[in-house]
Amino acid sequence: MSTEPAPTQALLHDTIPGADDLTSPQPDIRDLATTPAPSRSIVLVGLMGAGKTTIGRRLAAALGLPFHDADVEIEQAAGCSIADLFARYGEPAFRD
View 1 (cartoon, rainbow, N blue to C red):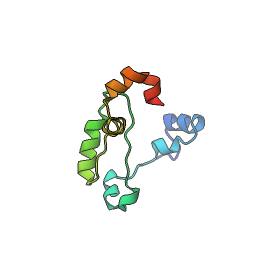
View 2 (view 1 turned 60 degrees about the horizontal axis):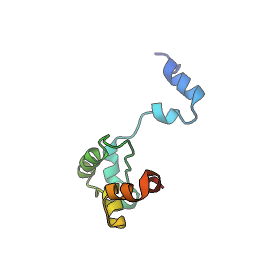
View 3 (view 1 turned 90 degrees about the horizontal axis):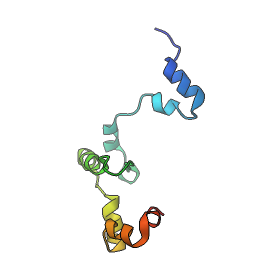
């Protein structure tokens, strides 16, 4: 067996700082269940409609962690829906 990295891995390693993190073995996510609670946070980031809420709920249930939906938190803090925030202040203000 060759000790040389695969061509794709070598290209990533040579051109993208930190690419080793993308190609190295990752820990089993179930190991998070044994990590002390204050350091157990998972944040899902993605485009609207990508499935963050669906995956987040399932992941939280599987790991025994609380689930917090950013949209719900924003709506509670603002006292109105995200649609209302967009209508009143526009998307740039919402993203800020």
